[in-house]
Image 1 (cartoon, rainbow, N blue to C red):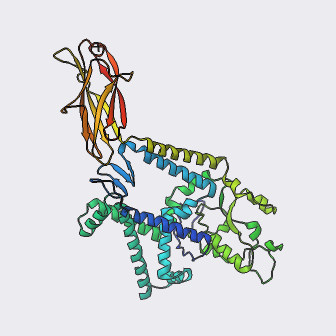
Image 2 (cartoon, one colour; image 1 turned 180 degrees about the vertical axis):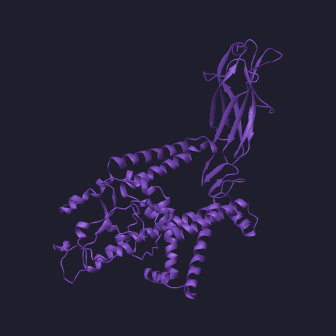
Length: 485
């Protein structure tokens, strides 16, 4: 026996297996819908095709690490546009803050991958071994042929789900049909097999055996959710002023909902038996609670059977506790959700989203970068003219080859007198760039002898690039070094 005065506190409690009972109700149906939608999106998305033209990948969603691109249907993100990805990550974080502030841990209870795959694994377990009581009997039964058959069957199905999960992940990083053929033929890259094996193992262990342990010990979110919640946050709670004192109920006996002294809770343990975290919501707010609301469905079902009002366990705000204890009506739902904190989170979230959309539609279909060649700063030609050299880097983000015309202007928008522009190796001022590629071109700008640019010091110039197909233009400001420099 441990001595609390001598032994240090234990940071980890040995896992006790949890066998959630099946429950029906509004929140359970909502979880089924979200599980089906999220799993369908995850497994199906890599197989959706999207025609981008010849020579371009036709996978709708693709993270092309080899070519450093991210494709999302009609959107193509280049490495220098990573701010779009960063913006989406910031929006995801603010979204978590927003939903947690308004509705508690709804992400954890409904859409978190750990929750979704755990639900799927529990569904499989229930299908193979039976509901809660049957699984409990099987767990306590000695090993025999039946137990071994059921366990092996369940584990094999879990393994197939985990294998599909790991396989679906790697399909996002290369052409899915091609990779599948290579995987089956044993010709895929070792990195594909390694990644698939790691994700298969983690899904199998996390969804099948660790389950609630991941939420309690591995996930940081339960420990920071308190900072995101306040007394106006709607979360799953037990109305103890209505349910206590709990106990068995005799036919016709009055309870608090009928004006009696006895609580409505009959201590049936239905809320505990359906909880995937194995906690008792009647003990109050707990770190382990993921607000999946299955206890609400279970309790409402019992209340219907004994003829008592629903809502003994419900989504509610702690601020309403005092009012409800006194018999007053709770605040309207909108007043709990629309408050300064949630409005601020939503404003920031929406603002970033609008900014990303605007930036997406305003971005140019081609990019350019100009770097003056400074060794030497300028070259004096045989006729006394001064020539500067520039490295023009032109990126064509279109799905077809384009011709681009290069020109130069001064600060006033006009071509400076005595200035000419030549592209190295090309007869004119136009350069062709193949589809979805970057081209580097040397540009020579020459100022005639005795001209203001040739005889002066450092002067400002602007290089313009125009798409010959659609007339879109872009420019970069640079400088010209004259003889005085």
